Length: 210
Length: 210
DNA sequence: GATCAAACTTTACGTTGTCAACATGACGTT
DNA sequence: AACGTCATGTTGACAACGTAAAGTTTGATC
Image 1 (cartoon, rainbow over the protein chains, first blue to last red):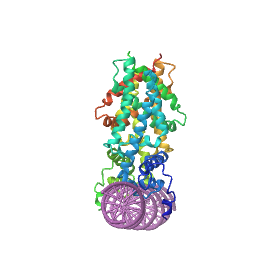
Image 2: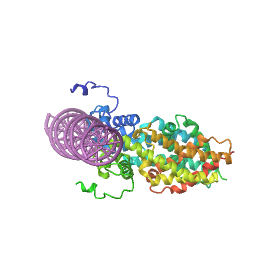
Image 3: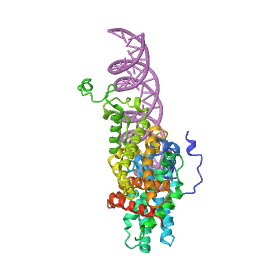
Image 4: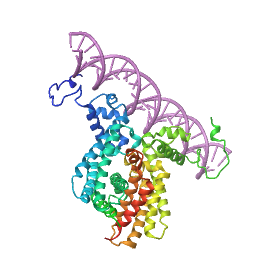
């Protein structure tokens, strides 16, 4: 029964902190997989523990409770988003830069479906968690910077906060609704890429002075 | 114990079908309240039954299981949305009409938070439910009709499906994200009404020919 | 090498969703 | 009017879940 935990004594690649090399990350990963497969409703702390190969009470020592784990997952999602937006912001042309941000948002969401399925579900999260707020504001700031660059380029009167909120809401709405709308209209909706580009064009035009 | 169910023998307004005058509707109402209070994660079949004053297994006879009840709730949400969009579509000016639809969407969402909290959570719903699909397509058709009217007025080349998807995604994204964004940015975000009107203006301008 | 705290397991308890069995009321048929 | 039938609602049971408490193992530090 106990050889399973000791059959790999060497393989010291990382500074294996304790028994498990990195349980919190493993649990986050398993949680992301599970939520990605079954959605937030199909999530179960015990199932996550099972997939990580630990007992059902192990997660509590790192995340406290279910909300703690999902909050950590959401924070990681914001972290990935912030990184993707930062990478997309290397483009010098402000117009192209915002378009890159739009693509980066949707790509990140599609690559991390488990993270983005919980990111805006406040009833599942500890909204006051410092990590969550930190990475959330970081992502928002990346977007705001891109909108500011756009303002400086095409329209000094552009309301940055307003425009950034519109961008974010539009992107997230698109990500969240596309499957439902496809199903409602009979799997026949327009491709998400097409809608994204159309939306970016529409917003960029709209942000210009009259 | 049994007088509570028989203290109102007359008052035969509706053709009270059986014991309870209308349990399915009462359960939907209780479910909407509960989801509105605690979010989908705080939902519980037994708690809903408790609030409706019936035993914990009563809902199963009408909705099968939890998914069945939430699916019915979502269908009712789409029904309300379709009705609101229909009312908003009485405006004759196509531009003002679409703006009305935007306001109607957000108002309906704010008036029925429980319904809209589950409407796009596919992991909670039976996506193939006939009622859900019926009212969902009905709502979508109302929106498409308004976009068609706009196309006929301002731009014959407008891609209606694309534009309608953009409108819907934008509105829902706004409704879903506003609380989170407010919290992230420190309760300081722009009012939702302002963002809505700005978004409508932006879209309407964007839908015009170059 | 003994000690201590962190990491993990085990056990236990209350709640939940769902199922089967049961009771009750309404309605049509004869 | 009696009866059978089915929809309606209740009761009891069971496995899975989240969480807390107590116990066990492991790594680090003195």
